[in-house]
Image (tube, rainbow, N blue to C red):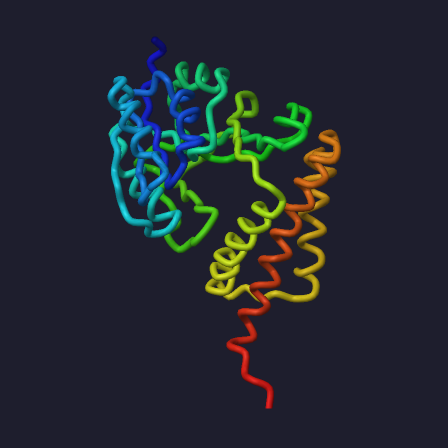
Length: 261
């Protein structure tokens, strides 16, 4: 069996339909930390089944304090110097698992890998579509989560972060357009609060240029046009999320509505 001398850590709630594939992709890891925040769909039973099979899972049940705080707690439970973070609906490719098995630490504080999203009607984009890098392999003592962020939790490193362009992570969660919009609205609300707290203001320019810029980035620069209509939908959804964030930020600047006289 391949030995991967790393900890993996996952936060989850009600992820029974996805977590199994995630755990299978972590085969060979010496330790898997899972922090669950109140699953009721059978996720905990699935985790315990894997524990009974000898998978080295340490399960923690903890109330939800927010994305960043929950991931920071999970990272702190890891006992190995280097730790890999996955979401429950993500999984390692065999190529990435092999890369991690051969990993030799250097001076990096963290390492970022490309993550590719599954596009309904197309599948995973080919390597010719430029996926974004996400820092996921972290040196525990040189990284922490920014607890001021409510969403899109950010890691703060005290050293260089290397980008590895080859092996990729896979993200599989198929959502209807309505579900995608509902998720975008929720994330936009949290993101707008973060921006307001940092003193950011919305304007006509940010509400028009930023969504257009996001669409151009995804559809043209990252080349999602190669994925046909699914790539177009994906790029438009990304632009809508930016618009919703700016619109919510503007509304928050108005204060509570007063009734008309």
